[in-house]
Image (cartoon, rainbow over all chains, first blue to last red; front, top):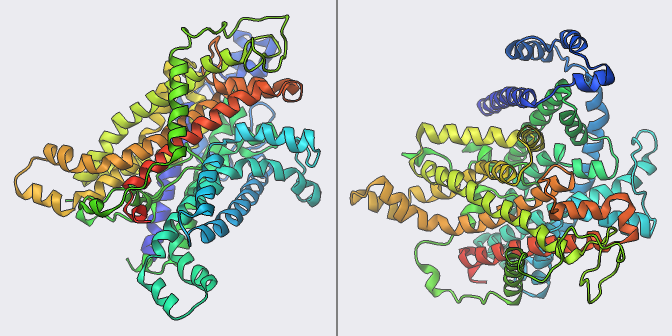
Length: 314
Length: 319
């Protein structure tokens, strides 16, 4: 186990390092720099040179990278060139938005997908199974940028049940916060529902054909007990793996709903920072997002060892 | 010899579809499950008919393809012709799908708009298949240091926040149709690589491969004659999933105004136009048609992919 942990930690460090280097090179490849935005009408050659020097952007690239990396090791991710907000602060305000979006959307996805799969996999290819299998393809065909405007039009503008945009931190007003979170969470949950349902259904179907299920049936156990106690656990691997990938992707991937619903999440901050050439913000956020991604895979791997103890022995 | 590698390593090798394709994921187990059984047991199966929906889906894709190819020949008015005497009209005999706020014909814009999605989608998949697929096929069979390196490389790329790379490269390189196609196509390489590698790996130690080896077949021959035919089912299925994924991502970029900047809009642009400036409440048709067309196209692609997978899938074959 300790060897396994060591290997994964090493993997984390390598991935974080490579990603930080890639991000650095990518943003510095971009034409133009942040000075045009800061100087505005005072954009003269002399002013630009002074500013570049002030920001430390006049050094060769390798030196800029090492300076940044050194600061990161001391826990300092730097400040935005434009509004001097620290990257740590952007993270502190953005992360709760994304964590909440992820939690709510995944809770919805699991509570729809798991019961549905447990019911339909018992009688595959019957009417209910066919309808829900075809229906989930419909969900898969509704990317957030298509479904979000429709949700706003129907439930915010039309029915007025939910606010169209806005974000209030949970600590300020939990009720308002949840109320505002519903529509954006639903907009990103559709794809998850479809994937989880389809993976679990297909795994359950193959598990239900195994001998230990026949054994459980012949012992006279109730269907409910067989499904939950005997079939669900060995069928949940693909589901877990997919959940890990999905959650990892949503950390910075929810920018479309963040943009449409005006929520200050990490994805949106990242997109804006790239457009404004706010190098330090891009580098800092991309690094944290990549580390979070790898850590989530790590956690999922750990859950695997709980669900299936054989994973460790191998 | 690749025999000591874990096929079903639940760790790193389960990250097949990274953040380029949020909402789509599969594990090695899934990929293995997607494959046909090569032992020939299929003969005893009674093949299910493809079903009515399958043909509907195929029909819709054919219709979209035909319309986009023949757009110049069809009796449509120009997608950018502005008729100020017919603003924001509903569907009528003159404008089958209505007009937008500048009096442009929505059907014409819809048909011309499909071109970007289709070109980016099909050629993007072709790029991913040609490079990632070939590499995965060989890497999964041969194994060795190259396989380890490529596998680790694809893991790192998948951990990279894709949107940063996309926006940065698009800004740097310019958003022409060719560039977007290449960027999204190259972006699918690690995914194609992982999926096809996992599949190829699962066949590398099968008896028929060892038999071929014993008979003195060259590696080239084994890859082309023994491995490739068995990997094709999962390749076809996954290519369709990828096609849908690329169309979604192009749409998302276009929606954000970051994709192809042609005078003729793509579906993503159209959806954006239909949602901007309160257009959804004044004329919902502008957004509705491209959203519906895209929804049906993605649904059709996914449905066809799934029906094909069912055909190849031994686990569900008997049901």
